[in-house]
Length: 216
Image (cartoon, rainbow, N blue to C red; front, side, top):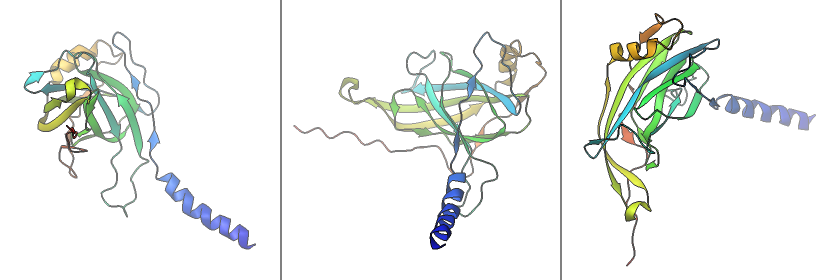
């Protein structure tokens, strides 16, 4: 009897913790030249991520296309219950021109990080959006990010982001809509929901740059 009671107590402790863990999902890319098909409860988000590094635009991208991730924001307080189940959509990218288009579930999301592939540390841009009406395509804006970076030991230590100079969401909705409308069966179901700054945090590097120590 005591053993059964102990197991029940453990279950009550473990289940709420598991329930709060985020659900990892795979965003479906809307490949250029194909008509995206949305499933029930899905939306299409599109826009561009444009990096400028040390004063020079990285577009068109080569191997260093942006790597970014969407997440449902965490509650502002640890004691606050989440308004919806948290989701994580990792390993997002863009094409060579910085454009992206993904089918994702409706909801409230923030960009958890975004930086050129192979660059460290992670860059938190401090941007979020909310899109709740399924079946629509949402233009999130053109995210322009200016960074300073350094290369150590000819690239053996990788590319390091040393400073964020600027993060701005630029509205080029008319241009983006005209470019994207031909791929949608219902071209009138395109709306603008620009990314906005998060209230909780400003743009920052998730782990500050520390140059490696070289012993002579």
